[in-house]
Each structure stands twice: as structure tokens, then as C-alpha cells.
Amino acid sequence: MLSSDSQVPISTLDLIFHFLSSKGALGKQIQVWVEENIADYVFEILQLSECKDPTANSCLQVLNLLSTAEQAFKQRLVVGFTTLIPVLHHVAEVPSHPFQNQTRKLIWNCISDCPGILSTSQVEELILCLTMMLRRNTDGEMSMLTETFIMACSVFVAILKSPSSHGISNPATSIQEAPKHAVQACLNMSGKDPSQLLHSLYY
Image (cartoon, rainbow, N blue to C red; front, side, top):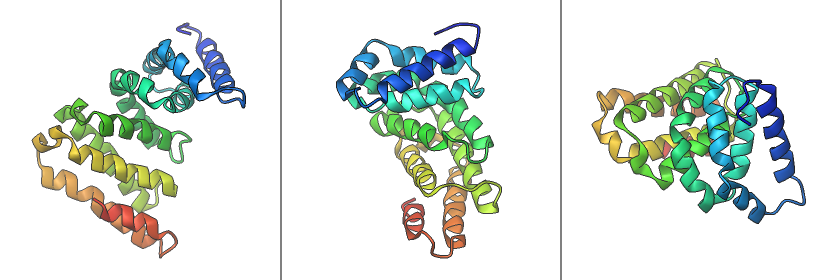
């Protein structure tokens, strides 16, 4: 899997994904694959890819599938968490990136399960990234799907609940801007999706 030829890991990851997502694959099988350290290899490939598509896409779709083995995957996710932060930056720069929501979901799962995993610098980095995404959504530069918007709000709340959030610099400025953009985006929806407003107010 760790080949210098990018097509080798992509083909291997696609094969794993199609095998594990087939009708014959059971949850127990996915758990076994996680326990056999497949997730560790996928995180390593993701790191070596430097977030470049399509390798990053193949990694994310496999990780999203492996995450269904929640207990077994939890430890692997903690180890690979730092790899996901630059990936979030990458998907944030690409409008309608197919794995925006999956990336946020993986980050949310990790922070929710292990709130102490975040350093103060990571909190600040994630807040800046999420705020930028919400701002671009409000300005019309990118359009978030409802589930993507909800997950962005959920990640932000999980970050604010982490112990390291109390040590960030200029907390008022950093934290207040994101909810402002979230609420504004909901108001711009003109009532098309009231659930977005509820999630933005959860801030």
C-alpha cells in the first residue's frame, strides 16, 4: 500500500472499499480489518499524499467505512487525528468537495470521544478553518449541504467543550465570528431549512 506509485495505493484502497461495502461484508469483518491495523496504513497513506486528490479521497472513503466499527476504530482515530487537520484545510478550499462532511465527521467523533486530545494551537487552527468555511458559505463563495452545515456546527461545539479551548488567544473575537456567520447563513435560507437555524443557535 505504501508505494511511491500513487496509483498502487489508490487501487488498493478502492478494492478495500468495494469489498467492505459489498452486501456480503458484515460489521464484524470491518472490525477485524480495523484490528489488523488497516486504518493505521490508511492514515499513513493520507499523510504521505499531502492531501492531494484522488489519493486523499480514496483514503477518506475507506476511513469513513472503517469508522462504522466504532469501538475498534476509536483508538486508531486518536492516533491518526493530527493527519485530519490539514485534510480539513484542503477540503475547505475546494467548493463542494465530496468528502467535506466525512472529514468533519471523523474530527467530530475524535474530539467528542477524546476532548483532551486537542492542543491550544489545534483549537485555534480548527476554529479559524471552520470560521472561514462558514464565512465563505455566507458570502456565497461556497454552498454547504444541510448535513455539512450541521456537522460544521457540531464540530465547533465539540471544540468549545474541549479543555484546551480555554487557553486560546482573543477568545471573544475567535469564537463570536463563526456563530454570526452561521446564523446569517440560516437567515439567508429564507426558511428553506429551519433545522440549520436551530443548529446555529446551539452555539
